[in-house]
Length: 198
Image: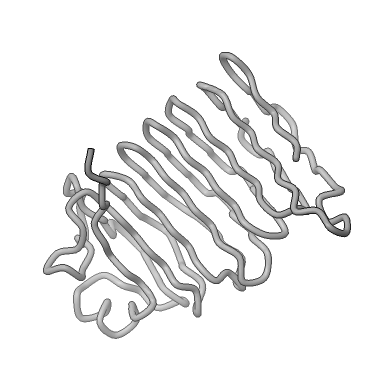
């Protein structure tokens, strides 16, 4: 495994790739973690091992960033996560996991087409300009879960909900109403965050 960590901040200014994670008999990972993680616009990070994980205590804001791993991708913050025009590429039948303690905002995201699962979780999830790939199981969790136990909120931001604000699609089909969700959202699950008992 390779870990890039710091007491205060990890700041990635340039693109880089790490190789060697596929050696026989190894299940290696690349993790980037610090109280504050900053990745500059236009940067691409790729790794050929089991997982690429990025975690921070403070807010994470990625703009025009590409993350690629031959298997699983994970991104987590104890604050907010804001993703703008990001590209998240996992391996064949792998998983992409994005977690924010408070608010997750995605405005423009491109995913690889062969993922098995996309999992996004935060107290409030705000999605715009996202096309989830066909055949991928999508789980979206928020504090209050689905409206009527099933649906996202459409067209605006409601705190505690999964909000499909603008141009959210599944397999190229727009989902902007409960009717279109029924028609094209069969692989999408809107669920409630289940906090373990103290």
